[in-house]
Structures are given as C-alpha cells and as structure tokens.
Amino acid sequence: MFLFALATVIGIFLPLQTAINSRLRSVVRSSFAASAISFTTGTLCLAVVVTLSQGSLIPAPALFSSQPVWLWVGGLLGVIFLTGNILLFPHLGGVQTVIMPILGQIIASLTIDNFGLFYSQHHPLTLTRILGALIVVLGVFFAIALPEILHKNKLSSLHHENQIWLWRFFGILTGALSATQTAINGHLGSVLHSALNAAFISFFVGSLCLWCIVLGSSSKKTLPRLFNVRFPWWAWSGGLLGAAFVAGNSYLVPLLGTGVVTLIVLLGMIIGSLVVDHFGLFESPRRPLEFTQIFGIVIMIIGVSLIKLLQ
Image (cartoon, rainbow, N blue to C red):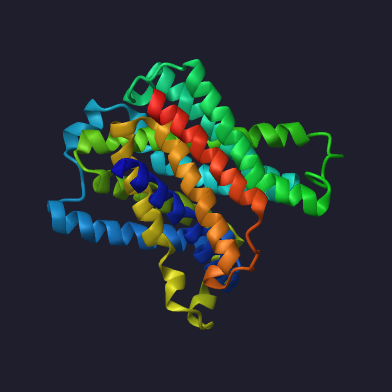
C-alpha cells in the first residue's frame, strides 16, 4: 500500500512541475529553454544529494563497458517525449496530445512487463491486466477528454488534416518511449544500487540534449530575459519535482514492474492536473473540477486496483 501511495504522489509531482515550467516559459518565451533550465536545476540538486550520500557521481568505468548502451539513454528518451508533446499540440489539439501518449505508455509498459524487456520483472499479459488497462483508458477519457468534448462538441478542430493519423501514431510512439525510459531507469537504479544516482544520470543526459537544442536554435536569444524580468522564486523549483519523479520511478520499477508503476503514476498525474486546474496553482488558469472528472478518477482507481491486486 505504501508503494501504491508513493507512486501516486510522484505522479502528482509531474503536473505541478508542468505548471511551474509553464510560468518559467512565460518568462524566457521558449519551451526548450524553460525545459533546459528545469532539467539543469534538477541535475544540480541530484548531484549534490548523490555526492553527499554516496561520495561519487560517476559510475565505475567498468560499468560502461559491461552494460548495454541503452542503459544510459533514458534521459534522451525523456527529452524526445517532452519535445514530442510540443510538436503534437498544434496538430492534434490539447485532448489528443494527452490521450495518444497515455495510450502509448500503457501499451508499451504492459508489453515490457509481458516480455521482461530491459531486465524488467516478468508479468504475463493476462486478460485481467488487459481489462484493467482498458478501464484506466476509459477513466482517462472521462477525466480529460469528455469535459473537453462536451464544451467544444468535438475532439479536435484539426480532423481535416490528411496526415493526422501519422501525428496520432507519433503521439503513441512518444508515450511508448516514456514508458521505455521508466523501465531503463528502473534497471539503471538496480545496477547502480541507487535510484538517486540513476535519476542523476538520466537528468544529466537530458540536460545535455536540451542545451544542444537551445544553443543550436533561436531559443538561446531568449535566455537574457532571465536577468531582466522578475518572477516568483518557485519558478525555479520545477526541476526538483522532476528529479523526485524520475528518482521515484527508478526506485519503484524493480519492485512493482513497469506496467503497474506506469498506471499508478498516471493516476497521480491525472489527480495532480485536476488539482492544479481547480485551484489555479502556480498562476495557471483556473478550471473548476467537474463531476465527469471525479468519475474518471474513480474508474482509473478501479482499473489500477484490478491490475495490482489480481496480478
């Protein structure tokens, strides 16, 4: 029960981080620059914690030659997922930009568990797990998609695009990469015997990738705004929540499996996003909670419980 609650809490951290980074983005006027700053903040904080607790940041050189290459690329997959959401929004709209990656996360996480990929725990894809995953998807629909559909009477205004299904497939793919990152970081934590060290490496790789994007694009021109515009102190704290999110996933995956962790964290993400919207936290637009969203959360809890209790 403790692990279930922990996964839910770290899931709540992600929408809080998103709201904070959105405020930071309004200052620097660049999604990539805001993400790079957030990743760097998280990396530095993890570096301090890992150094104080373990005395060393860099793994033993022998690990780099004895372990597969994919073990070190979790941060890169996280950046692809982050960038993918930025690219998807103008083509799919807000609802499908959320739904498609979630679908990819669920499909990939259950596949990883079924085949024991990336040295994950082996959990066969039973009918119960499939049914539970479908119930979770239904809960996501009620919590996110249905209110949007009822307000707009349509899922997206962009259905006329001939290549919309390619963008939907890309959304599913980015979600699958996110679940893959979770599995990789979980095994990295086991290899290093430290979820914090695994999170540091993931953040360090992600930071390098993002700064390459920023410095190689027009985004670098927005950085001087950091010194010219006043903004709240908490705008710097998104990286801390992201670090806790990644470290928590790295800790939980070896214990619960990628599929269960992904679904429970997803539940926390939905709860957190609805709380942020309802109270307008971190200067985000306020959107009162609706009955369909509460109903969706209840359905998601049922789906997750079905997978967790009967696996």
